[in-house]
Length: 124
Image (cartoon, rainbow, N blue to C red; front, top):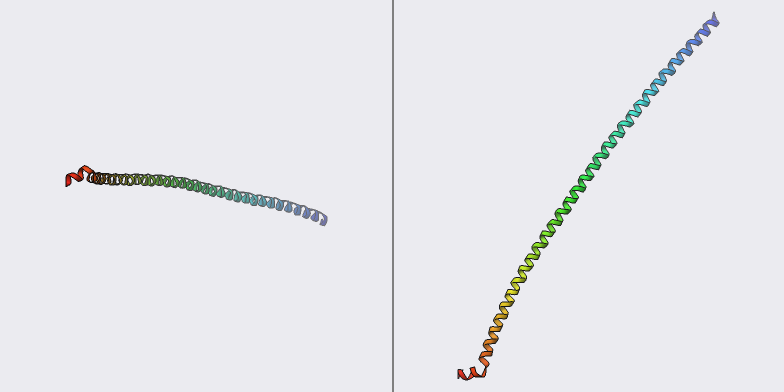
C-alpha cells in the first residue's frame, strides 16, 4: 500500500507540476502579449509624434516661404518707390538746371547786347 501511495503521490505531483507548467506558460504568454501590446502602443505613439513633428516642420517651411515672398515683395515695392522718387528728384533738378541755363543765356545775351559797338553808340 505504501508503494501504491508513493506511486500515486508521485503521479499526483507530476499532474500538479504539469498544471503549474501550463499556468506558467499561459502567464508567460500573457506577459509577452502585454509587452508586445506596450511596444505596439509605444510605436503608434512615436509614429503619431513623428507625424505631428513632420506636420509642424511642413507648416513652418510654408510660413517661412510665405514670409520670404512677402519680404521680397516689400523690398521690390520699396525699390520701385525709391526709383520713382529718384526719377522725380532728377527731373526737378533737370528743370532747375534748365532754368538756370536759360537765365544765364538771357544774362549773356543782355551783356552781349550791351557791349556791342552799335549799342554803345546809341546809348550816348
